[in-house]
Image 1 (cartoon, rainbow, N blue to C red):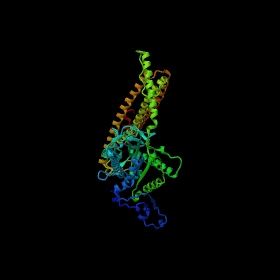
Image 2 (cartoon, rainbow, N blue to C red):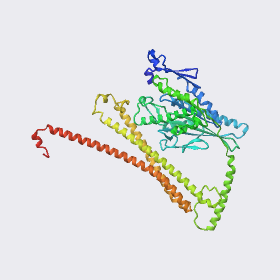
Image 3 (cartoon, one colour):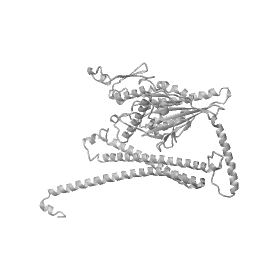
Image 4 (tube, rainbow, N blue to C red):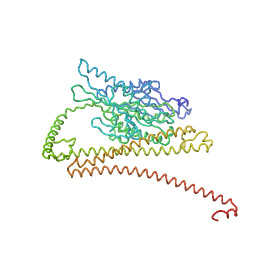
Length: 583
């Protein structure tokens, strides 16, 4: 609507559904004939190109629909939307209630195809193919991963792990099993409500994070121990943005910097893959690590490049087309994901036999000891030699300890991020309260028409500043609630660590093994305590800086008072000055 009111020029042309012509905006807006031979017009050819009049259904039929059959055949597939802010990526991928986007249409078609596959398998009364669908939904916000389907989507951050079966995976993410497309649509709606969106000058509902919906389809035929695993990833990237166009300040500016950082890393990966270089910098960003398989691994990928035909967005549109043109040169090698556990059956049988031998040996030991106290059995003894009993118990205890320390480290990092966010929000709150408090006292022209946030920000009137203050207070309240929840979880985690420490003498009888495990546990705890001390030092430094600022302000006030008193003394006569105290 703003673009229509501003009477912008359309500089994009679509030819034959494949060729995109980006016209020179200077040639349309001026009669400068000297630029006739220096046109910036660009042409790019793609597999499919759509104009603004095309419906979402047609875009879906040409992009995501051909991938559904591949997913049901145990291939990995990815569809992601790339482009600048306000270009329509979220509308393309998610859509609206009246016009669903690519995500919802893909999910519906996937379940319909799975239902047909089951019905074909059950012809003649035979048992049908078992098909299970699991979903997860996450966002990459400020280079941190958040689970949008957990009980509290804004609580805690997740880590990326390399899974030997599924490839790149997110540890601890909520995977929900769905029976119908309606269930997935409800999960998508609930996750989008928790996704971070804020208004900017370019977009009223600007996405401040990258959203990733992953759907895992596992199939198993009756009587077959193996299974087929297909994964479909649907990704809505946040748009690249310029601070001069979005008028972002404070937290919004930091979010935009992190968005551009991750998109720059994505562009570097696309360039490296297209050029055929040996090294691809996937680890420069959490986003590129998530897209590792989608860009250059075991996956069939479709990139949807959203561009704006607005002549004011010429540079952003050109960059998007350049990235999409480079992505055409990427070659992937997809293969079926078939898990066959038959090769390990003999190993499982041998492990069961070893466990039975271990049980018989322990029974004999109990019989010899009589009423003597015996330490509890380890849970994962894998050998029949009694000499390895303490070693297995030690490994069991070590794994529990490592999980406890990793959880504590993750919670502590989440607490640090929350405290940094709270500090920024409180600074913005103090700034808003100062402007609102001085509104009536400083009734000048700039205050009557509106005040800018910083230099070059959008103007706001008094009501606008009050709304801004209310939003900041709501954000602070949410962060404080999240912080208290993380502190409770930290307290529970520390108690669990103390319980593990107390259980060590009863679970591991060998003194040398016990001393070794205590050293490992102590080194891990010291690392976490160092992180906690760094956090405390950072908070203490912030408090000291605030006190230093207060002291500097008080000294300035005292200096101004003394200057004022000295000026008043100069105005007094000699007789009046003699009557002053201290004279």
